[in-house]
Image 1 (cartoon, rainbow, N blue to C red):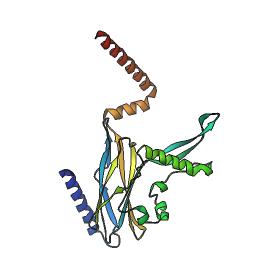
Image 2: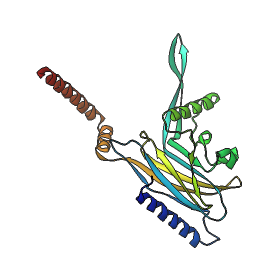
Image 3: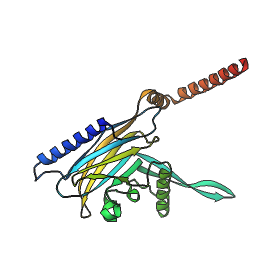
Image 4: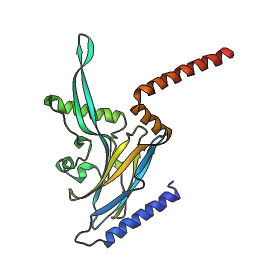
Length: 253
């Protein structure tokens, strides 16, 4: 069941959304407004995934809602193996740029019922239309490498294949739960809410979201990256001490 605090947050968020839409002038009014229950996901040592609430309101006539969560952008190398002399070796590789480490989609209806493939591709909506910087060279195999990249992300649970649900409360209010797995990358994300009518995008609002490590885990992570050599020495020393201590303890028993 939803907690009392979350219900209050949801109701207050809907109230703010309705007030904003109601007070805006017709000539400059937005087609919709949305917000997140939190703009920071704190990753601790025991982080097992989390769920955020996105809520909003639509102005005027009913519209379809599509939510795209993507980020952080990074370079990803994709290798392709070939068999040579009975041994599988990496023969080809391509590096894609601007690849979102996490990509999740939610919509009120199936995408093919909301808009054409051309409209979806223009706005980067859907796994087939994820925006990334394609590498140069080996253009004939580019589609295969891109497919392999997305397949690997799916296997890691970072590109969910199932489209999330968006609940409509009447014709104006909507809400959706966005789940982030335990292996979600840290960094800055963009949460974009699209409103579509008659197969056309009438509004798009992007809200930033930060996923950051905190606590002892964050300090160890920062130390390991800033002082990698010293971190390796300390790790070896701790392992040796743990082995010696365990041996001494069992020897006594």
